[in-house]
Image (cartoon, rainbow, N blue to C red; front, side, top):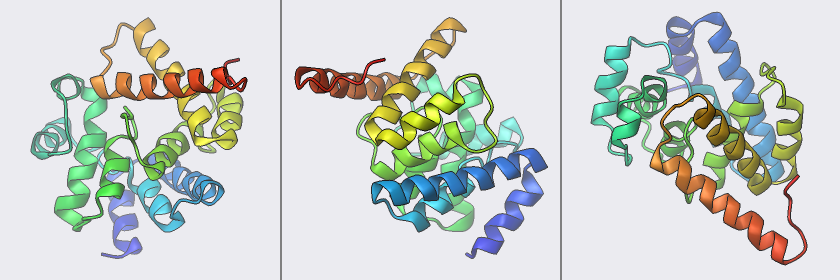
Length: 199
C-alpha cells in the first residue's frame, strides 16, 4: 500500500470538500504530533484517512462497523453519524491491510474519543476539531487549547462535544463519557496543585 493508493481511493470516494478536509486534518495532525512528540508519519496518515468511510453508502458503513472488533458499543451502532469512524478503521484493515492498532484506534475514536487513548489518538481527535477548514464559533479558542497541551485540548473538546450532544438530545456513547471523566479528573488534580485550567 502506498500513500498514492490511499489518496486515489479518497479522491474517488470523497467529495472535494471532504478530501480537502482530510488533507487539512493530516497537516494539523503532523503539526500537533511534532509539538507533542508523537510519530508524525503515523499522525499524517491517520489524519488523512480518518474520514475514509464518511461518504460510503450507509449500508456499507453498517456492514463494516458490524465486523469491527474495536470495542464498539450498541449506542454507536444505532447512531448513523458515528458509524463512519468505526467503518473507516475496519476498511483500512480489510481493504488496505493496515495492521497498526494505534492508527486503527485513532481513526475509530476520532469522533467519540475514549478513556485511555494514546497520544496519537488524542492528536487525531483534536486535529479533526481544529483543522484549517473548520470555522465554527469557538474554533480559534479550541485551536489555542489544542496547542496548550493534549490534556487541556481534550478537556475542552470533550466539554464542547458532550454539551452539544446533550443540547441536541443526542445519545452519548459510554466511551465518550469515560474520556470526559478522565480529563475532568485530570483538571481537578491540576486544581489541587493550584494549576486548574478551567476558564
